[in-house]
Image 1: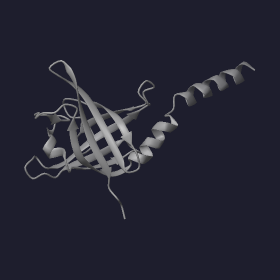
Image 2: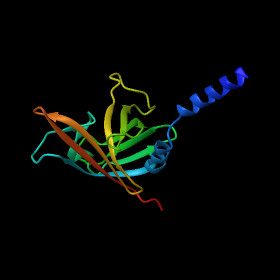
Image 3: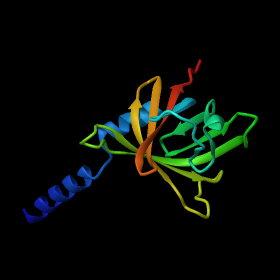
Image 4: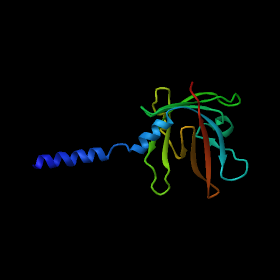
Length: 161
């Protein structure tokens, strides 16, 4: 009897630690090719912002992104010829919905082409503010002169034929 109780408790514990249905569904939606259409700021003005420790806003707009959720990897290609063009690689994680805001935490970690971290081992925490079959929005809140400043990155899903 004692063994049965331990097995039931162990099974309950293991199942409760798994990925939620909400996260699994969001990974299905994010899978595929996306275009980063626009980047906007919560405040009016001209800002010199380097996103994801890579390139400026103007370089990211029009970039193409691919998400492969079965191994949490992806890549993006900067297309703007006035910028450092080319393909970049990353790993990503979608974390459980924040109960207070109803939003997801989205973690993105730049890597090399073999999906290994660089020497700095950095990552970026973003808010996955919107995710549908056709649109996605990331938000990152930073501080500018001691005040919250929100950067919104707006994607559209590429149509596959």
